[in-house]
Length: 215
Image (cartoon, rainbow, N blue to C red; front, top):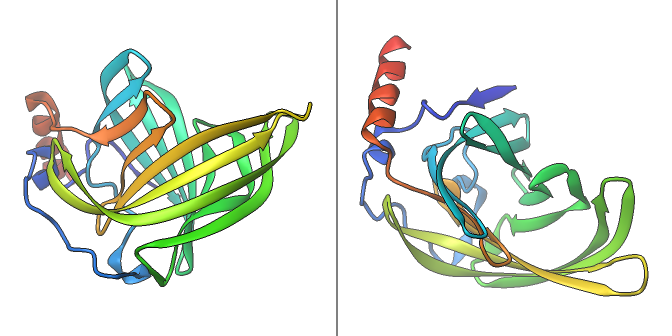
């Protein structure tokens, strides 16, 4: 298992590079590195409801498995689990490994037109409960104006419907932005749950430079 800690990042992103980055054509392909093994924008803005905080991330890689852990005040507060391989990028769990999807929800398929749609059916597992669920996934090209600069990305909108076991249906919208060479630069769960890159503080920049020098 490989771990890319918050201090080991590309200095261009620590300093807040405003370069436009790679462009996205009409086809999304595996070779564009939509989920690289190294995390390149460790400082993040983490928002949950009214709380907006500077946080960091750790990326754990184990074969095709990827886990993004959000670290706030020295503690892991959220985890996102994905599968990334030559055929797809899929969501395994969100917020916590105890809330997961079986099978994983495909977010990107390789190759595919940048504007695509498909459906998913499976189980939304929340702790001991296994609930029937279905989702519609829609992708499109989008440009993000982030603290690290302007980034072209594939936007993925997942409209998730879960039966709560009593016949009631709960609908949520999950949004992800995948940028070539950077991976999932931004994600939103519903309203007010956001992760996106930010500019590093001077202390974080110094820490990154020191870590690079130690290596």
